[in-house]
Image (tube, rainbow, N blue to C red):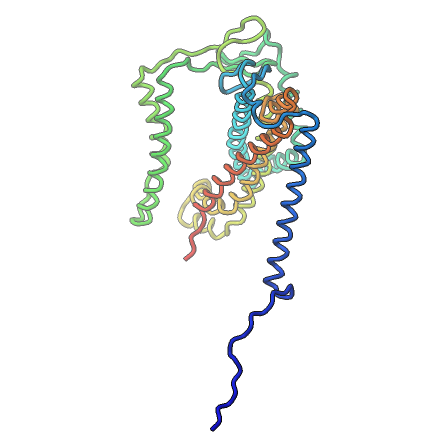
Amino acid sequence: MLATHTQDSGRAPSRLSLNDPTVRAIFFQVLVIGGVLALAFFLVSNTLDNLERRAIATGFHFLEREASFGIGESIIDYSPKDTYGKAFVVGVLNTLKVSVIGIVLATIIGTLIGVARLSTNWLLARLATAYVEVIRNIPPLLQLFVWYQVITESMPPVRQALNPLPGVFLSQRGITVPVPASDPVWTWVFVAFLLGFIASVIMGKWARIRQAATGQPFPVLGMSLVLILGLPLIAYVAGGAPSVMDVPQLQGFNFRGGLVLSPEFAAILFGLSIYTAAFIAEIVRGGILAVSHGQSEAAAALGLKRGLALRLVILPQALRVIVPPTTSQFLNLTKNSSLALAIGYPDLVSILNTTINQTGQAIEGVAMIMGSYLAISLSISLFMNWYNKRIALVER
C-alpha cells in the first residue's frame, strides 16, 4: 500500500497579538511603568533646572552647618552652636517621646474605657459611653488648644506655684517634680529591669509549653512581678541604695533642678492620648463582643470570676480582633504628633520648618520629614504585624 501523505506535525510559532490576555496584560503594565518613569524624570529634571537657574543649593551638606537657633526641650544636650543635623536628631527624639508615651497611655485608657462600656454598672457604662461619643467627635487640634489653655491659664505664676506634695510644684511653666540625683547605680538598675523583663517573657513561653504538656498552671504574673521589680531592687541595694534627690528650687523666675513637664509637652501628650483612647475603646469593646458568649458561659461554669474570666478567657481571644485596627490608631497618633507645631512643642516638623526657613532647603527638609514619619510608621507596623502573627490562631 502506498504511504499516505502526512502533514508536518510541527507548528509555526504564533505571532504576538494584543488579543492574547497575557500579552495584553504585560503590554499595559510596561506602558504604565514607562509613563511613571517618564513623569518622574520630567519632574526631577524640571526641579533641578529651576533650582539651578535660581542659584538654590541642593543636597544635604547644610546638616553640617551651625544651626544658630535654640530648642526649648531636648532629650539630649543641645545648644545653638550645634549643627542642623543634631537639631534634626533632637526633633526625631522629641517626636518619638510623644509617640511612645502617648501610645502606652492611649492603650491603657482605651482598654479601661472599652471594658467599662460593657460593665453591668449603669453609671460606669454611661460615663464611658459619654467619654467616647464626646472626645472622638471633637477635632484633635481643638482639644490640644483646650489642654494648652487649661494648663497655662488655670495654673498660677511661678512665684505662686502650687505645692501639693513636697518637691512637687504646679505653675504656668508646667509640672516640676524631684528626681533621683545622678548616680552610676541607676544604669545598673535599668539593666536589671531589662533582664527581668526578658526573663519574664522567656518564663511565660516556658509556662505555656509546660501547661500544654502537663495541664498544670504556673503563677506567671506573680513571678514576672518578682523578676521585673526584684532584680532592679537587688541592683539598687547592691549599689549602696543612694537616696539623694534632685529637688527643684525656685531661682529667679523659674525652678532649677528636678524634672519639668512643660505645658507644651503635657498638652500634646494628654490631648493625643485621650483623643486616640476614645477610638481604641470602641475597638476593644467590639473585640470583646466578637468573642462568642459561650466562652463567657464556659468560664463561669469553671468557677472563674468575671474579672478573671475577662483576663484569662475573653481578652486573649479578643486580641485577634483588636490588634489590626489598633495598629492604625497607633499610626494615627504618631502622625497627629505633628500638630504639636500649633502649640509650640519642638517636634520634628517644628524644628525642620525652622531649618527650612533659615537654609532654604525646602525639598530636602520636606523629604526628611516624610522619610522620618515613614520610618517610624513602618517600624510600628512591623512590630504590630509580628505581634498579630504571634497571637493568631494556628489552623491545622
